[in-house]
Length: 156
Image 1 (spheres, rainbow, N blue to C red):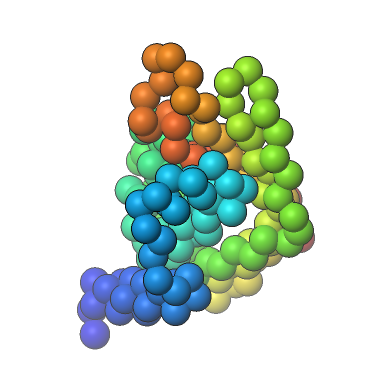
Image 2 (cartoon, rainbow, N blue to C red):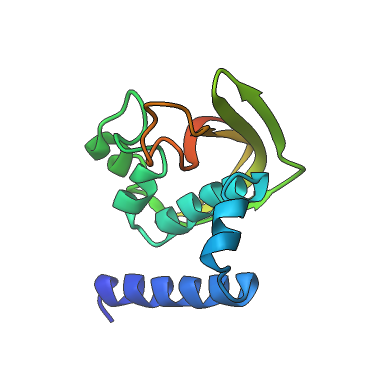
């Protein structure tokens, strides 16, 4: 089996697992209502790690926003995961939401468990801050969606 086949199978399994966990998709009206919730912000963190686990770095990159992770090129971002074989994230506590200057920020505490291509286990604890702009004059649809704003992770 080629590496491409393995990645495809992993994506299909991840999609099937996620579908089983989340159940039926909400209607458009429910989706619009829940997009502002801390649960929707937590989903961004989970989706980010699902993309990394599937080696879908382009999808992971845009979780940081239209221009990707601030201060880092896409090539450097991708290289940063070159030795990552598997990765899982677990939310370790309640998400905290705050508003400031037209934006909502949600801090999501996490534990990240990874396995490198050489079989070494890695564990990180910390948090992500996820942000979205409120519907203010001049804000774009992409600014009004949740995106990763910052990360603070410590190796354990």
